[in-house]
Image 1 (tube, protein in one colour):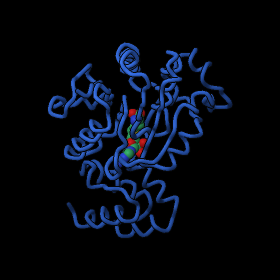
Image 2 (cartoon, rainbow, N blue to C red):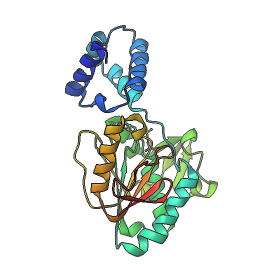
Image 3 (cartoon, rainbow, N blue to C red):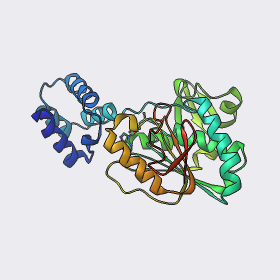
Image 4 (cartoon, rainbow, N blue to C red):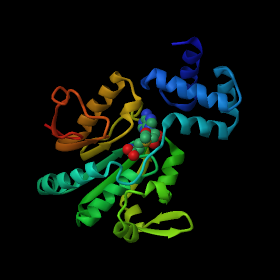
Length: 257
Ligand SMILES: C[S@@+](CC[C@H](N)C(=O)[O-])C[C@H]1O[C@@H](n2cnc3c(N)ncnc32)[C@H](O)[C@@H]1O
């Protein structure tokens, strides 16, 4: 790694509490160089200086490296499978269902899950915790206000049932908002809670190096109760599920054995 980046990674870890070492190097460094240039500086030393002085520059940097893209029912067909697994598999087996949506971005993912539970009348028996590394997007998640591109996979019925539209914004109902508790959590640096029946962790491990990714999978395994479900992203199927203690239920859904 270039010396400049060695300095910058250390600076970010001690000042912003993010471990960039875990992220794929080429992809991340390209993104950092781009966002640094758009801030009008040409060295990482200068970039660190303006990040520490200017809240907005810091915000843009964090947004850019954490990549918050999301939408309700992302990969709709996999969510349909997930709904079947919940109904046929988890509901008969467990009295209550604790769900963790890790790296939830602005909340579209945990709220999609909340809608599934609501529609299937299992909302009384569940708890959904949703976490992300990024405070600002967690605030947005909490507010539950979305734009057209984020709700494009929603059916007209569900849209009418769960949102009120005003201008170009869609306001999520309190009923669904109240089903999800948001809090800050870093998948690399923070300890993982235990006792979940479902962990949903999608479209974030793609940004991590293999060692970091495997570590996350092991910790998720440890967070699940036996028979619990791990739901991954559409480009994140696990190559060695058996070695990690998982049984594949479908391409993106695994059971802890
Ligand atoms: C592309 S979004 C995925 C959102 C949602 N899971 C989905 O699939 O639609 C990736 C999210 O990972 C979060 N993230 C990045 N690094 C993280 C880390 N070390 N710990 C927790 N979340 C992280 C980002 O802030 C971002 O919100």
